[in-house]
Image 1 (cartoon, helix red, strand yellow):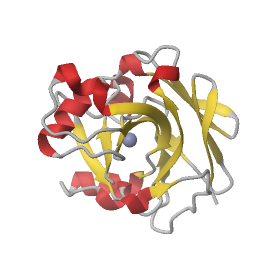
Image 2 (cartoon, protein in one colour):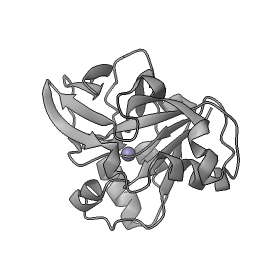
Image 3 (cartoon, protein in one colour):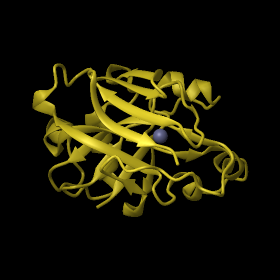
Length: 203
Ligand code: ZN
């Protein structure tokens, strides 16, 4: 199982971190040891002082494929979930400044809490999914997938040029504006169309 993540896939988020808007999807990966499932708590790691949440819509891959053509891309995912791409922003800034890979800032153990999934066919409007992240009950991120720079199908095509997609892989599709820090004691909740899919307590 592989976890693909997309960086800067919403214009408003690229701008809030003073990053340029990409012309191609920015892909990075997390190992299976990054996953936290079953709404288990997240334990604040000791190597960062600036841990950020990034709430994201996650695609579940349902079919193996490589070099997928655009007209077939939508057959490769069947459900969406809500995930958090936890990021040690202080480590990431340092690594980026030095031109180094940012794995330790993004792909560390338990850096990817992932909630339950909704079948695409059960969504009101799969072409524009509304999602929200609440921190301690307050909305901190509010996104619509119509604002994706690279929509789901484009991601399937692009990723599968380089990596074979396999059933059971996940794609974290990027975060909208509103990322911010968490502290021990915070509770994050991920909603898709008003349905609570993920709960994550920071311990
Ligand atoms: Zn992210």
